[in-house]
Structures are given as structure tokens and as C-alpha cells.
Amino acid sequence: MFNFFSARRPSTLTGKAMIATSHPLSTAAGLEVLQRGGNAVDAAIAAVAVQAVVDPLMTGIGGDCFALYAPAGGKVMALNGSGRAPAAATVAALKAAGLTDTIPQTSPHAVTVPGAISAWCRLMADHGSLPLATIFARAIGYAEEGFRVTPRVAQDWAGSKATVAGDEFAAAVFLPGGAVPAEGALIAQPRLGRTLRQIAEGGAAAFYEGPNAAAMVARLQALGGLHTPEDFAAGKDSAEWVTPVSANYRGYDIHECPPNGQGTAALLILKILEGFDMASLSEADRIHLHAEATKIAYHHRDALIGDPDHCRGVAEKLLSDEVIATLRARIDMTRAGAPALWDEPEHKDTIYLCVVDEGGNAISFINSIFHGFGSGYLDPETGVLFHSRGASFRLIEGHPNAIGPNKRPMHTIIPGMVTRGGRVEMPFGVMGGQYQAAGHAAFLSGVIDLGLGLQEAMDRPRSFAYGGVLEVEPTVPEAVRADLAARGHSIVVVKSPIGGSQAIRMTDGLLEGGSDSRKDGMALGY
Image (cartoon, rainbow, N blue to C red; front, side):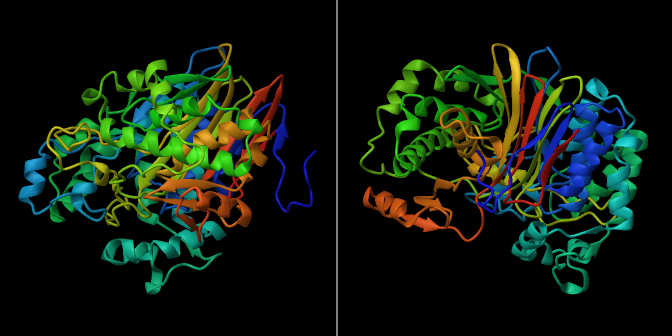
């Protein structure tokens, strides 16, 4: 029985179709498309297009995306919509340009060719049913006429002010009058609206070729980037369907996108947890175990995952019974292990959404510009804010995630899908950069091991072993924090919520949806 005194909300229940996103305008746009007869892909693209306008520090058409799509009665398919580095990008070239160990967020070399529009158009061509002009209508309207800034977006906007303050074009759009927009402020992006109109008319070619591509290339080259018109032209068809990686957790098959995403790390954590009776453990034990499994999984992710052409077979090897048993045996329930080496940049800014339509088609979709406001650079001709995904590349020759010509960097953004007995049960996802793989495991353990409803599982207090410390939300009881500290964890109580999430569960004609209360969004259906 749901506790209506909890100041939380219960899951949303409907019978035919549902969409869950982290922004109310995105949810409304997707629901409108569903009600007009659009399918899950139509609704997902309509929703993400809106969020690319109204949540500009989290996502945009200048970013990347991944999707898991399950047509009714069919197998789960994975779409890799991540972009590639310029053909001239090499470790030697970047070191010659003055970089040493890492690629800074605000470096033009952090901008890989955006993959989102290629993926959106590929999804629509292969599985959509409505024209792009219809799908983009709400997004174009909000870009041209303006949108109201929601509470969580306003908070995050303020936290990322410095990123756009350094670029005159980005500052002109995102810091009107030199100030962060207040909650409820009206913000418009007419140049972005024009670009969306052109994509609606001309498809991916309107973004990757012609005047828009020329303008973006010129802007990046002026910043010192190695991008060429040929790099952008190649990006038009960069999105590709790939085979998901999956693992069974207590009878449920969990599907993730394969490398270059970090979905393998989520599966690795789950397989380690599977060796323990999670339901019988204390809250302190569960947090400790999750922390230890996370450190092990992420250590291997950082060392082994990168462009799929440079880490073939790694996911399958890591998820083998032999490797899982060896890694699980390293965990001591009485003490924290030595922290893994964390030398990836911190990145928290992403949006996730999921849709189930009347026909039973389901999509799990994630879109990101990496850091808050991405690279911080905006092209004034197109209104496109460039992401910073290339900051995750290594400048280490021979490393699977070393930058290289036309190479994809390791990604943290990961959509998820659950099936059982070949039947799709739940598209789900967790936002929060590094936290995402750990968040997948924690959320699924709450649903599967503890039998929680979707909204209840999302709203539970979160923790995350990161950077040699154990971050906990203030809602983790003090007694539990003391127990964890006694085991050797360095406890840090976070000032901002850890991640966000959405999910839709399909059972016997009933749809149950959840949208994380840490964000502005909601799950709605009919």
C-alpha cells in the first residue's frame, strides 16, 4: 500500500499508452503525438526535440544519443547514435596542440561530430509513422516563441553558468542580460527553431551538409578544432543498429547498448549482486555491497571500454561466469575496499525518456550533451550548442578509449530494457553521468529484489561510490551513514540529488510508469 503521507507520488497507471520524461513539456509533447495516432518512436522523437529546446544544459541537437527499441512481439534492437572524432584527430595532434593528459570540457577537441540528428532521422525512417514537421512542431514553437524555465532546470542552469559565460554567443542566448534566467522566465532560441525547421524539411542532410554544416565547421575551426565539412558529411549516416549486450538477473533479461556505452558496467554490477540475498540484507549492507560492486565494475570499464572496434569481445568476457565469480569474491562485507582509479571526467548532464504505445512497441531513449551546457560553445548561425563528449577520450596511445581518427569515445549514457521469457516488460533508464550504470543496478534491484513499485524504487535514497568517497543523499539515515563509515567508507552527503530516472512496466494490459521526483518531469498516458 502506497504511503500517501510520504510527500512523494505513486506510480502512474494507465492501460493503453504511456510516456515518461524528465520535463513536463516533453511528456506533454510525446503524449500529444500518441493521442494523434503516432507510435512510440514518433512520441520519443517529439519529446526529445522539445527537451533539446527547454532543457538546453542537459541535451540538444548538438549532442549524441542511444536507444533500445522493441517492436511489439520482436527482439530488442540497439541504436548507436554517438558521433565520431574528426579524421585529423590523433593523440599526437592533440599533444602537439598543447594538451597533455586530458581533453578539457571547453576545448574544441571535446566536440565530436554530433550524432543525435543522424539517430533521430534513422529511427524515424525505419520505425516512425509521422512526418518530421509534425514531430518537431512543439519544439519549433518553444524555440521560436519561448518556453518557461522549470524549477529543476533553473537550479541546474545556475550551477552551469560559468560554462556559457565564457562564450559570447552562448552567453547571449543562455544568460540574457548577463544573468541566469529565474524560475518561470521566458526564453527563446529562434536560430535553433530555424534549424529545426530546416531539419524537418530536409532531414539529416540539412544538419550535416550545406549551409548549416558549413557554419558549424567554420565556428569549430575558428576555435581551433580539426573538424572539416567531410567529417560532418560522414556524420549524416553515422547512426547504426547494433546488437544489444544482455545478462540474466534472477530470471529477467536485462538489455543494454554495447560498447562504446557503459551498459556492460551496469550488467557487471547486477551479476555481482546476484550472488547475494539482497532482500535479507540491512540497508547499510545493501549500500556497502552496491558501492563495492560499483568500484569493481567501473575500474574495468575505465580500463577496457571504448570504441567497439577497439574492444571486441570485452563485454562478453567480463560477463562470463568465471570472471563474475572472481570479482564477486573480492568483496568483503565488513570493510570498504581500496577505491578504483577514477580518471574519467565527471559528467552528469543527460536526459532520458521512454514510451510504450497502443501497439505494444517500446522505446528506451537517452540523449546528452555530456557536461552541463556541453562544451559551452554555440554556433550563432544555427543556434546549435556543441556537446563535449570528446572530453572522455584518453590521450594514451594504445588505450581502447584513446582519441583517433573517426573514433567514438566511451559513453556514460545508457538506455535499458527488461524482458522475461522473450516478452518486453520494461523500458527504463537512469540519468546522472557516471552514476548511470550504478543507478541501473540499484533501481532494478529495488524493483526485482525488494518488490517495489517503479516510483517507489526511484524515490529511495541514493548512494554512489565515486572518486574515493561514498556519496549519499541526505535522506540516508544517520545510523546507516555511521555504519558505513565504520566499514571504512569516506562519507559525503551531497548537496544536489543523485541522478534521475524514468521507467514504464508492462504487465497484463496494465502500464505502470514512474518519473523521478528529483526532476521536473512526469509519466502520463491514457
